[in-house]
Length: 291
Ligand code: NDP
Image 1 (tube, rainbow, N blue to C red):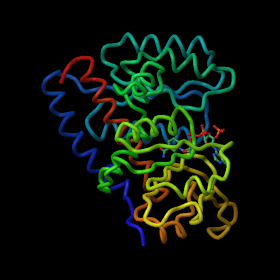
Image 2 (cartoon, helix red, strand yellow):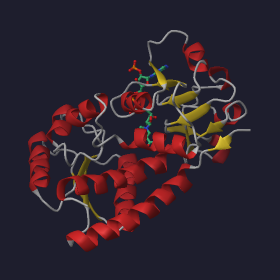
Image 3 (tube, rainbow, N blue to C red):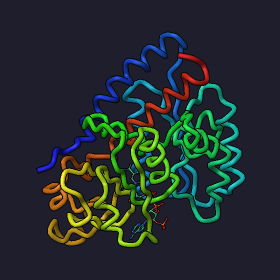
Image 4 (spheres, rainbow, N blue to C red):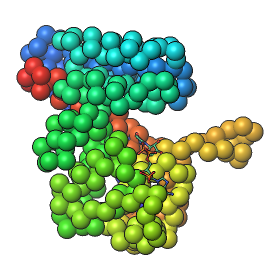
């Protein structure tokens, strides 16, 4: 049976470390690092994520502030708010919760956030720096993946890594980070032929697809380490009429019998992502004003 990579516990340790570093920043700089989260519209899941980010930031001693904007907010109003936050010295990290309503151009919004305050690591300048091996602000979920691999004592040099998913948010940056640690990396996606065979090559398999329980034991090599990034809500009639539950992209029960280590959903990359967001906010503050 695989070792369970307990993201909740590792995230707690990381938050504990951050609390001490935040206290030291406060005593030297006379203010707390500040994270500003912007949300447009009323998607319930996004509001849950945003509340969790706000709570986590205040728990480690940072200033967390949420800007809740109406669904009909214009693109210009959002861009103007971002420019104000860019210019505000007390704001160290800016995050715009995705997805945005259809009438707002996501690329324009992400490009407007100052690359020095881009704690999601989505700005093309930060993506470019990561690609040329000079990481500055790195996307949070990929960072969480690397931290869990470290905890599992996976020495990546020379290992075969397969990342399923090629988004700018997860797939591409996690592949860059694995490559930087000298893994031999394959990025698979919806056009990949014989995906199961490609995945079976992997010593480290990262699933970032967004398809409930797509990856079964037949995709996994005996002894592989499996990181399940997917968060999918499915109907769960066994819990009662109309109930749902969260599952990953991986069929946990069957893959856990084959893998050496595996992340659960929930309790894997989810909590790691939030802890890494806090780490990025402190890092951004230190980059701008010093430790
Ligand atoms: P995207 O939808 O942006 O990307 C999904 C990727 O999966 C695409 O590259 C797509 O390929 C690929 N894909 C889709 N279907 C298949 C298939 N049948 N076979 C192989 N590849 C396929 O998703 P994200 O990267 O944003 O997120 C992925 C998952 O991770 C989601 O469930 C999301 O909720 C979750 N997530 C979790 C986070 C956390 O905190 N734990 C944070 C961020 C995301 P193509 O490019 O060809 O379309």
